[in-house]
Image 1 (cartoon, one colour):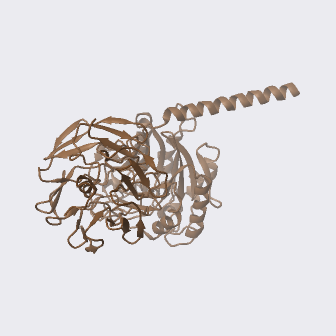
Image 2 (cartoon, helix red, strand yellow):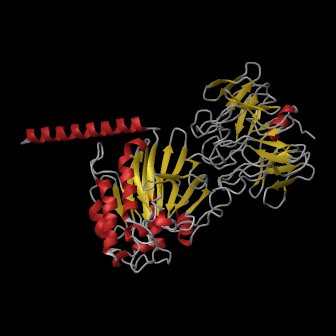
Length: 593
């Protein structure tokens, strides 16, 4: 008997070890690989087969997911709620939902339990509708309840005695995720308890990136067809969820449906260096109960971007306007470490501009004129540095692909940055003559002194750039709404950036006399000399800005990590240092009139 136990233990241990080894190997092979999440919005008119809808549109969505699972590397499927229109009063609608969703459970190679999926409870799935506690969800739990999912490796656990709120665990691209579903509760029968439970789950799985799914979080974009005309507003439950969960840095995304009409919305919010992006998709107001539209969200970890597409498998069409097909940064934001990334590959590129000619890596582009100032930045909210110039003779900005925007006058210094935290760079100038900041669509702000260097950045990690200056008479950093920090000495060059990847820009200076990088609260870095131009950037794609210098003699960039880049440009033409700082450097580290 003892021998049997030993052999049995050995076999179990060996098999477990082998499985762990295979899992680790698979994770290693998947690391950085692109993968997708399929998102199915409100299907209420399809399961009810009303408003021109048919269950065939719903079934076409899941069939497309099955057929394209390998091609799109679909790791997980999310239903945003309002599965049915009449909840427990209409059993037939739930039978239609089963016809559409259960095929996902058919075993596939490497997926003995089928494609992992989760479903949110919407207000129309409750009966009576709208209420989380007094509204019942018998049929939801009959077909998609605890017993149905229990034992599946991706199913996590549930809140209370039913599956109305639950969470799943899945992985993609070498990244582990937890998806938390919170039941619709606009009338606040249980919001605090639900949110507290979600916090417990987030703390338990603090090492997993978290996606929050709830039926109603935000409303439509302010202007249909674009994410660039003002952020969608939170609903009451959405605001409560965000306010409670924003302190958990593993939350990076929230998804919802519920709001029809155009049915698309986006916003992003940043707290303590962590950004949460919220996406709305709901097409129930379109013909045929939504035209069978759904979303495919493709994650590219190696480039640190999310690519969103909206498609109808039933009609074999794509919707391609600006809030249906777009790109957003994944984890690294332009307000922090994503700087001078001209091709959205997740790393900084060296760039130069001279007399209207740009050189970005090995690529030459003509845009702008010989008297212009280069001001590339994330003007489209996609994380990519777009080409842009400031016409200093006319006081206007020109962004590639957009119309010229007047702002400022002769003598103003361009200081574009994301001043409102919406993930899009705002046009702005600083006027030394009256120490005033002019930010597009905002009231002028007097902040600073004439003999100062403007250094706007997100110093507190809320996603919003603070107007800030370094006063040359005392080398104190005056940061609007935050405070004053003495740092540096005469001759130092301000080089604020997020050097540790915590989502907050660090106060820092480069000291040419000693070739030292002094970063507030961090060890000094020795790199460069009197002739070097500091060009901080994330050249390795690590999510941290690193010290780097351009040597004008050898035409090479040397980074703190030991990387060496050849870039044939002059110091005067390089744009990898904000204009306001570089003009100070070119003047011999002195104030320029």
